[in-house]
Image (cartoon, rainbow, N blue to C red; front, side, top):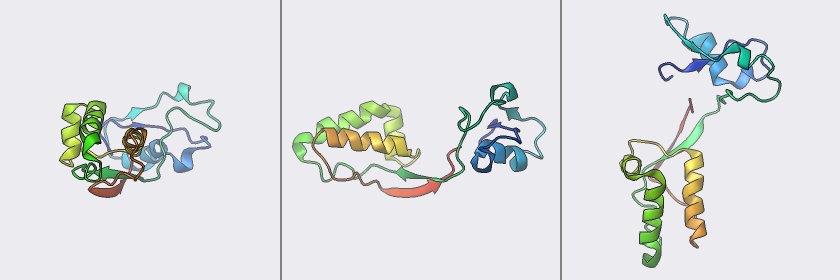
Length: 135
């Protein structure tokens, strides 16, 4: 769990069974001297959705993009390369390329959309995949 992760103590919340913030408040922070909490006044009327809800389901993230352009026609390679690099920015792009930073599912969708909008309909294949808790 990240340091200073905001936890929630609302026991009557209908979403608590699958909420990371609630689970963190019950188990992970018992030995901590200080904790950061979600303002209880902002969640007292939550019924079926919450702006602070964080699912406890693992997400499938990708690592590495060293081969995503391998099957791209050379005429489109430079444009796609620059489109992906521009989306992330140079610093983040190279962290992703070197597998330092994961590519989150929503970012994978954006990359796929960039490819699809440029006539590449094959699924983008990353170097590695793993499941993580999306704190």
